[in-house]
Length: 251
Image 1 (spheres, rainbow, N blue to C red):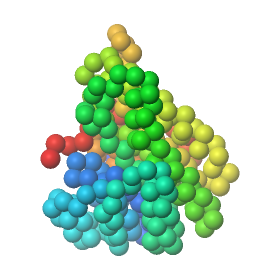
Image 2 (spheres, one colour):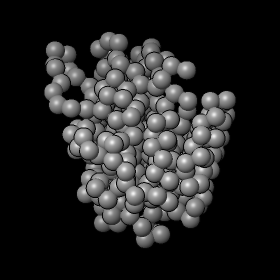
Image 3 (cartoon, one colour):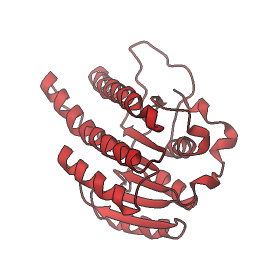
Image 4 (tube, helix red, strand yellow):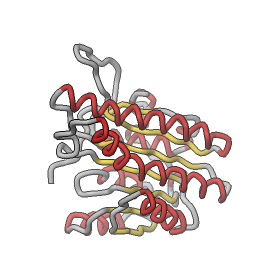
C-alpha cells in the first residue's frame, strides 16, 4: 500500500473525531516518533507514551505535548521481552479505561543489522524486534474487543537505508515477517472492527526500480497514522504501507 491513499487535502487535514481519542505510542525517542506524537497532541488526543530512556529531549517533548494534548501519561521503561511488552500493554490499556489507537514504533539501527552471519542470528533479531510488537498487538486488540470499541493498531518499522545486498535482504525478511503478522492479526480481529496495519521500509530487488508513491519522512508517517485512526481510515486493515528513506533522526 502506498501514500496515495492519503490525499493532498488529508495531509493538512484536521480530524475533529480524534479529540479526546486515547492513543498509545510506544518506542518513542528523541529520534523517532516525535512528529507522530505531536500530530495526535495537536488533535487534542489523550496520549499514553512509552520511551525506553528518560532524556532531556524526552522531558522537553513531554512538556511541549502537554500544552496541546487533552491529557498525557508518560512511561519511562524499556519493553524488553514479550512478557514485558504484555505487562506494559495491559498497563497502557488501563490508563484511560481503554485505547482507540496504538502505534508501536520498532527502530532498527545500523548496528542491529551489522555482522549478522547466520540464519539463527537473523531469526533472533526478527524475534527481538517484532516479538514485543506482536504481543502488544494481541493484548491491545483483545482489550479493544472487551470494551466493545473499534480501534487501530499500527506497527511501524523505522530502519536506515541498506548499505549492501545482505542488509537489504535482512530488511526484506523483517518486512515480510511484519506483513505476514499484519495479515494474520487483521483477519483475526476483523469481525470486531479492529484494524491492524503496518509501515515498513520498501525493499527493492537488485536492479529493480520501485514505482509508486511512498512515505518519505516522519511527517508522512504522522499524516498516514491520523488518516488511519480517523473515520476515513476505518475500511483499511491488513495493509503494509511503503516507506523509503525514513530513519531515526540523528540526535
